[in-house]
Image 1: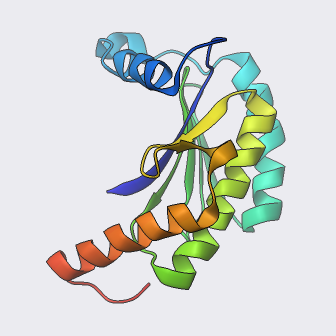
Image 2 (image 1 turned 60 degrees about the vertical axis):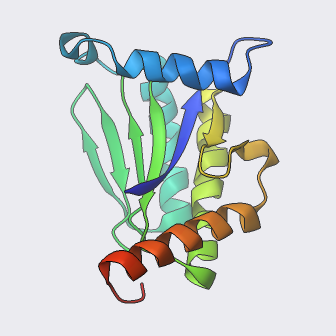
Length: 159
């Protein structure tokens, strides 16, 4: 399970619900249709995002194979993924309290970089708000509550 941020290219007047529904419909496409190269416009954005992500997070691991680009930060679990027409940030539910606040500050800052460089809009489905309208406290509360619930149910120590 992970805390997810999705990035979509919304049409003028398109609601968040419509944009996210379109994203879900695209995810249900036949498997053979998903093995498409990452568009050049997203490759160009990726090339601008990576150095900014390094400045924000420090050392990151990169994976690029033409069909996807992924950036992972071992210390936090933050992962940025770019596929054919999908961009997302995920972070596992390892963090709560002050640690969740620190990590989500990094996630939201990375999200702002992605928005700026791709022209896509970020949406946090856990907090049910676009990144541009989200307060860090709202996301932190959600992440902490879910992390604490998972630890209570399945065990696990502090992050």
